[in-house]
Amino acid sequence: MKVVHMTEERPTEGELDQGRVRVAVIEDHPLYRVSVERVLAEADFVELGAVVDSVARFHVHRQPPGSVVLLDLGLPGVAGAAAVLEVCELGHHVLVVSAQAEPEVVLGAIAAGARGFLSKDVDADELLIAIRTVAGGGAYVSAVVAGMIMKDNADRPAVSAEAELSPREEQVLRLVAAGERDVDIALILGIGVRTVRGYLDRIRDKTGERRRPGLVKEAIRRGLIGGAGPRRGGRK
Image (tube, rainbow, N blue to C red; front, side, top):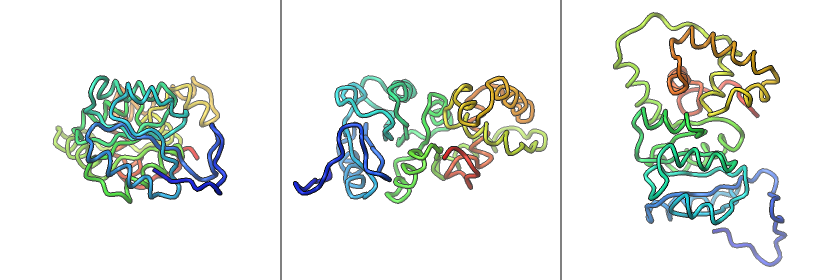
């Protein structure tokens, strides 16, 4: 944890020094939890919050909404996509850090609202980059995870040539992959909900993906999520 000297002026509750990011950790493996906590405590842009071993204990800490929460999936009690959904409903940005990185697990977590997904072999530098990206409203999937999903896609029967998406369609698809609802995408882009749904209809027609998990996979495959390829735009 960061040690605050008596001469330092601490931000009041609900406030945060400019440029700093509130980060919490939900991880039940003691050694990994301590290692992540050490990395975060040494990062000058991180305001370290709750570091706990379950979603139930996280509730007790009342972490301020808007925090980036590093979340393992194999937790006691509420786990997996249900844990992602519960933490998202508290108003946080979930960045999954898990040893479970099978395509269906990744897609399920992102469909539940996770803004990013890292495998547990990620290094400290990439972890901090992912935290900054998610805190800024972006989405991030580590190269290892993206590679697994793209390999899974490549192993499937070949389909017709890829249809090109317009810049606006790419924006909408990126926001879908970040876990945004139709109404949120409309607010972010300053357009109507019906317009968003029109874009989604065109994206589905072009990609052949009808359900959100499939659209998430398509966004990763096209490199629209950080870590899977270059980020082009997105919410600031």
